[in-house]
Image (spheres, rainbow, N blue to C red):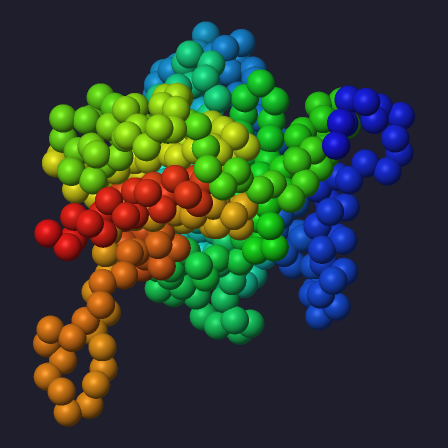
Amino acid sequence: MDHAADAHRTDLMTITRYVLNEQSKHPESRGDFTILLSHIVLGCKFVCSAVNKAGLAKLIGLAGETNVQGEEQKKLDVLSNEVFIKALVSSGRTCILVSEEDEEATFVEPSKRGKYCVVFDPLDGSSNIDCGVSIGTIFGIYALNDGDEPKLEDVLQPGKNMVAAGYCMYGSSCTLVVSTGAGVNGFTLDPSLGEFILTHPNIKIPKKGKIYSVNEGNATNWDGPTAKYVEKCKFPTDGSPAKSLRYIGSMVADVHRTLLYGGIFLYPADKKSPNGKLRVLYEVFPMSFLMEQAGGQAFTGKQRVRFLDFPNINRLGLFNRFVLQALDLVPKKIHDRSPIFLGSYDDVEEIKALYAAEEQK
Ligand code: AHM
Ligand code: MG
């Protein structure tokens, strides 16, 4: 959809209109999710505005500094966290909030509670703030059954139980990419309207890509399959062209490019960080959810052992190994980390095969 060429159209698909359309497909729906999403959208607009003004408003730099008026300055990621916590609590539709910025989960007070649990990184890639590189907000949403008393286990669930996930990228444009489990759609903020407009309907990731994205500075500490995979990207032995390397170091921007152009993004385990760097609940899960919904896949680099249950036979030794798809992972703690390989279906298949071959040795 060419939004620029549609300046005179009067039937733009705004995100609110899109969500209301979706809601009308579920007659039992009471609009709670629509209200929750509109509060997330508000948080994204607020943070977008703060990011755009960061240099002028002196929001960059360390928290704890004071400005000329003697007021305490807030780091952008601290400010973004406050914005989202307030927006989510005031929606009246949330019960548990998990933020990268807060050590403990926030349990919303009973009078303001709803049935949704939101896990989020309010401003990911914050090391890039001071040099103007794209950064973003990442979120995932779980739903409780009506009337359930919220408990921490409600957010320690596999990613496949999420009801929605998305990210907002604050870059050359402000782009919100969302999935409610029925495909992936991208919306771009029209600053003149203050509305997100559907610009990327039904995003599908190419089946195979030409780009790999990884912090190669960690190569000396990689395990065998990761090292072999990256070697294959650079020096393919099957006659295919070498892949290009693109790495921004800002997950939202790297994943956004991967989603649109195809290829693979990896943050693997290494000797120093056996669980990688990225956080399961609010980085790995939402991005894996979007990738799967767009036709790609996401893999943890790990295998899962499943014992085969044959009565009267000694179970020991009777098992199969399965690769652990990222969305099957069950986090034990809210800030758990996991290695992650995500992107085009065929590219992720290749790295899965290398890990499976390693297991056979
Ligand atoms: P952050 O949550 O502290 O901002 O760190 C997460 C970021 C991701 O955006 C990015 O993919 C990764 O860290 C980059 O890490 P590295 O600098 O080790 O390559
Ligand atoms: Mg982060």
